[in-house]
Image 1 (cartoon, rainbow, N blue to C red):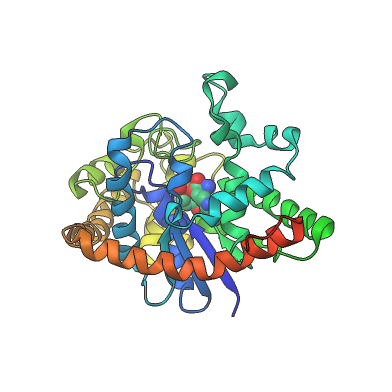
Image 2 (cartoon, rainbow, N blue to C red):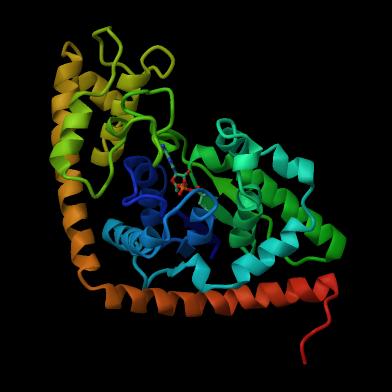
Length: 332
Ligand code: TYM
């Protein structure tokens, strides 16, 4: 079976709808077909400003959200990145075969340093993509299911794997990105040409999976749309309406064409009212289940410890082979 691997950062009090539709939802349907590894990249979460008082809680919350969304720790390997030290160790080795200019060209680094300049950024943020490459390469991953925004990081990962294999000998599987076109990018509800994000421009533009579903319903109803009237998918001319159609289609399993037909002759308002109901029906059980899981943190921690143990069995083999190929003196 092919191996897949993916993760979502614990950088907020909840995952948002973009994480769910663009990533987690797809993982759930893949976990039976593939040999799946899902983890919580908490080492990545500290590359930007963070509060140590939040980190552990947010990590448990994301863990509970994965499970509530349908990730089954029995069917996959499920763990927290900082529990498996090989991630940071392989990242260091990869840093030493990555060009400075190559890292400086990463668009996410450029975006994140646009405001404060590079002096405000940490070396950790600069090395974010090589840590991500380590996450993927440690497990000999074949496919990485992610949203569109991660495409460039996957390209770098492939380049580093090939470079290492050529220079030191075959240590890594060269992975492919698996980006599901129709749901790869969910946009901000208030600013539908920007992606929905944890640190979005306005809280009202994103939907947090753990928020009161009534608030989410309100946000859908006040989503920005153009001043036309026809409900039609057109990302260029109607980004707001198109985003609502994508969300509606993915949550209900209907196709966009079916929805366009169903709303022929109706107003945007009809679409929004119905989608608001769909959202409440989707969020309510997910939120309840997450809160149930969070009520038993000891059980969550036990699942994560078991996952970390299984992850290390694989990661340690890759790291030993890497150290050996690089010529380090083995510890006797
Ligand atoms: P993160 O935590 O930002 O996002 C997790 C996943 O959600 C997807 N995503 C979106 N999809 C559609 N629309 C959106 N608005 C949207 N926002 C986020 C992301 O594409 C991602 O798949 N670098 C990764 C975390 C990571 C990782 C890895 C992923 C670290 N190591 C190894 C895969 C493999 C990130 O920032 O995800």
